[in-house]
Length: 275
Image (cartoon, rainbow, N blue to C red; front, side, top):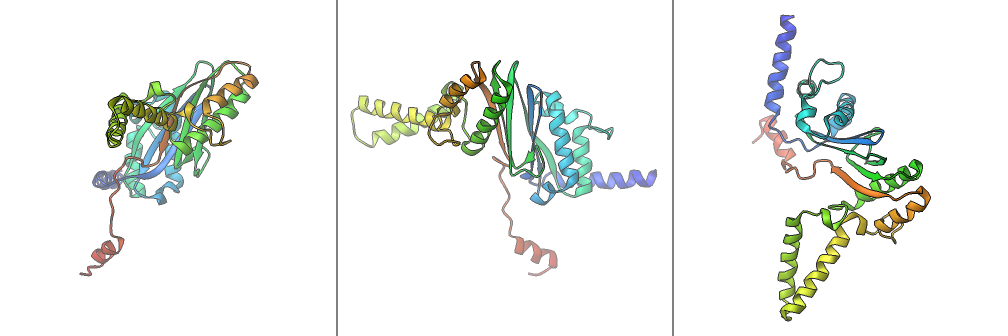
């Protein structure tokens, strides 16, 4: 027992040393149950670990636990990990010592509807519900669930492709709109036109911006013709009830993480003691 404790201590010490290393690879996990779905991102240092069966199992279990945690990473980290007697964070620490790479639970979100479906899509999947990019989208409706499920899957695929900022203009961060308007204003001023004309030019560019970045105003990638909002409206006839897109979450693996650029040849030379 003392030997086992010593080995575990050594492993955890190594894990602590790895904790500062950049982890921008890994997997996005999606898990749905009833009218709820959870999405998580668990990072590792290399894509090689994402193909590891142990790591895949961990991410799948964390995604399942994500429903109960309600999208709170802190809560999810402290939840009991199935069959180990450890918390989720402790299980990851143990896996770091075993697999040899830094790992971390980066983010998590849950969507739910009182009636309707949560559509989902995982791109570049290594297993069902696990891949490099995941999307969940909430459709609130009392309509036919088969119709809603098909629509939800297609909209999730669209979101994966276009990466919209929000469902509608009302949901966009005001700071983002203000920044875009300021850029458009400076561009319009270069035309030398009167102030009232510049204002109209800016308003037009802001409307175009909304069409490009809000889900319901985007052209549906599945047919390349209709706007997503019109597709949802048309589906109401088959569903037999109104349909409202209440929200979506899109996680692209490693997005926003500043990746360290290394010279592999230099690393090998250094390891070999070559000047």
